[in-house]
Image 1 (spheres, rainbow over the protein chains, first blue to last red):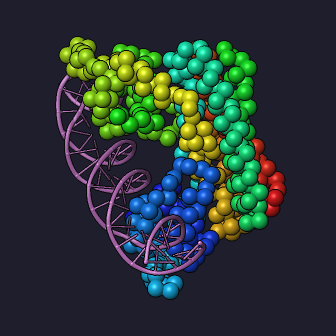
Image 2 (cartoon, chains in turn cyan, red, blue, green):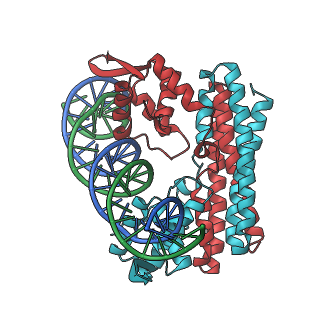
Image 3 (cartoon, each protein chain N blue to C red):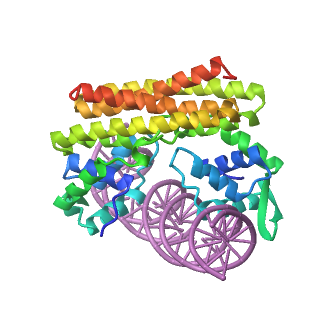
Length: 178
Length: 178
DNA sequence: ACAGCCATGTAATCGGTTACATGATTGG
DNA sequence: CCAATCATGTAACCGATTACATGGCTGT
């Protein structure tokens, strides 16, 4: 009666699957290089998490040493592989496929708390910040393209989201009282 | 030297601002009715949080009783109002305005772990689930329209995100190896 | 040799969820 | 009156972040 794996656990299973044998540090680097800042991939999150996954028999590890440095390399167990497939889905639940959280959208209903001038600045700064992130996302796309079609598709997904958000903000600036 | 308010704290400040005087239960209902399932608005989160905000002098409360039921009504203090304005921004940081987290997108690079048939089913189920959520979001829009332009804009933002995601999934289904 | 980064961890803190407890109100 | 729901909390657990500690490696 194992509980389903969390988002972070599922992502780590996927990263290990793709790179096995894989060290916790490689996983951390992947999070650090990701354009999405949602998870920090901090050491305090990743190392204990991978130990937990091993305790749950979803990962197994072997000691490893490059030169004199100790370390562990992780691989998926068959149960880990099955847990990964179940995490990917389908079925998709509401948190996976529903309206994604968006801190910018969250702020919109509270804009009347700002004076009109600050409200205009809010939207102006938002638009230029989104453009900057869009440029980063496009750079990320070209960087990931050699890694295969699915990495390309993921990067395109990020661009799609940013583009939609940009249009949305532009519409708000155009019709402030729509 | 107060730390900046978190997303949940900022949202609660905004909700209290819009409805003051406001009980924790009203705040919880707002989260429960929100189409985004990101925060549960559980009692164990909201009641202690509002007490913390009062301890930080961003909220003040007065005891209240309807019939024989005890309770507290909260209002913003001037400092709370300033904290709300600072939370809304600008400036926007990367977590606010960058690529939003998206559990569906997160799964894409791991699709090769699925057999081809399951991969097709993943995309098929994703598309139909997004359509269902889009219908909910549109219903939410018409429900919120009477509450003013900013609630309308927020609801439209959710629709924009879902529409973009739908097009993205449709493109993936059309060109599985793009 | 020494500074700085790479790599592997651990400990304390903090906050959100889950589960539970309790009383008040309302509908049948 | 009794059940279901509304409303107000509390406590335990769990996990992510922050900050710290350590030791090996690399360039100058």
